[in-house]
Length: 289
Image (cartoon, rainbow, N blue to C red; front, top):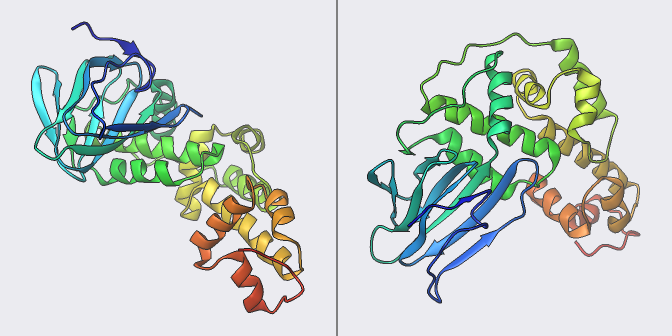
């Protein structure tokens, strides 16, 4: 069967599904697209994408034909599919299989590799499509848990590039840090309680978004997105103690809505904003969280 070239798993794939099979996909954003699926038998006929496909098998055995061989991936293992390379997908054992996959545009990987290595380089080539790679596995997991905000996506793409470089056995030499530029980025994040775009930080630091993500983590131990998120939550805690209502605070602090704010607050501190308010004794504030 002729292969079909598509941007992502949602385009042009011929799939034979039973009632038990399912696919859930998110729209592409910032060079990344997410898809999660479960198949009891054959999932996909032969096809190809013009993106990297980096997946983690969650349940069962995933089998696929790739580069003239039958490959299998067990739970926790990472599968790397290169752009424009033919493959299919099916259950490798009774009971079906489930997986999560992240499609990453090659141009994003190329830009991130240049930020990491300091020079234009060929795309990382992974010889073995199935691997036990902690960097890539954690990046896939975080892609499905992190908000699809610009700074979060920048950091994810750098981690995918790092994991691909690890699997391609290319040495990564430490690069110099522009401490003044990184400090300007931190000061800018400190001064803005709302969500920040990648282009804003690029203008302030004169570093590319991927270079900044790499250097910021090297200096401060976290990504610009995570640093900015915690500063927004610091701001939110102060405003909660001052009696600001949750719906208004969620908007001011740059969250999508009150539910989004409550979910992020609880994941950071282990309690809801409403419980935080009550424990602080701010009894005049009406909350639902």
